[in-house]
Length: 305
Image 1 (spheres, rainbow, N blue to C red):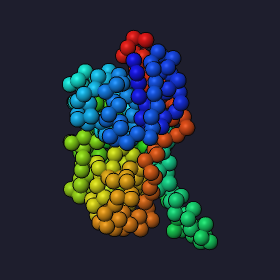
Image 2: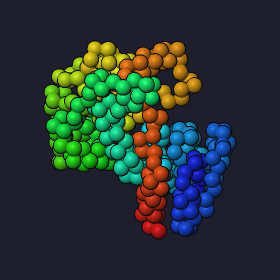
Image 3: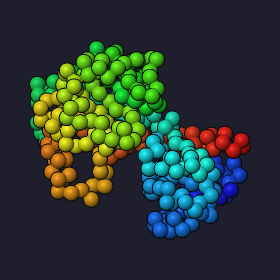
Image 4: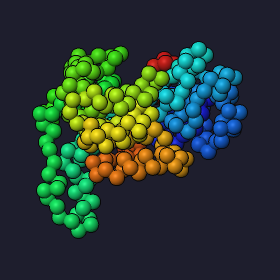
């Protein structure tokens, strides 16, 4: 079976597939047109985010599997894959540790004002009182989504002495069961760990944020379109959000931003209690390898190798 790798992934992927008996071809510089033209000659595909895999792309293919080197399947038309009998794999287990550590870093930085204090000292300002933070021990965190990421975050934050409420519509938590009503009522921190679907797109609205009884630290390391910039800005303006950490944005192609997007982001970024990172919560040296290990095990199991 021939397998095409179209994104830059750790070399262990090609090595592992070869050991399993696959014929591997790595083509990371393909245009969409070239990709579409050669895809029918392959039986397996390894992709991260280079192309969106649509029903049209799959129409004339004979793929047996698609392995997404990352978490989430929002760039794949999963229904179209299943209709054609294509097995689909993701590697959420491979970067959950990285995401959890990243989220904890964001929370601690916002709570203790580490990011603002660092900037001020670099500019010759020694301001102690203005950088007085708060301890997260005893606070309540609401975790929406209790898959691999949500569980990893909850497990680590338990050691900090937080009250944890985890809500998942499809996989309720037995460890830290919570309802959205409880989260709205008591949360000091909110962390999102849900996939991007038609149901979750735009979930975070002005009305959603208005449901919280206390100002919150808002953390999003899932997908940007779940939390559009407009309600986040409104939350900062009205004090519903007292700290904001975004590892993802609704539009991550910054060069394509419209004047409205530029203005929205600039106004959000002007608030000191904001932290941004370029979709790297799950992007560590260790996860780079673990993602491949997870996918290779799933492929091995699928084909009984």
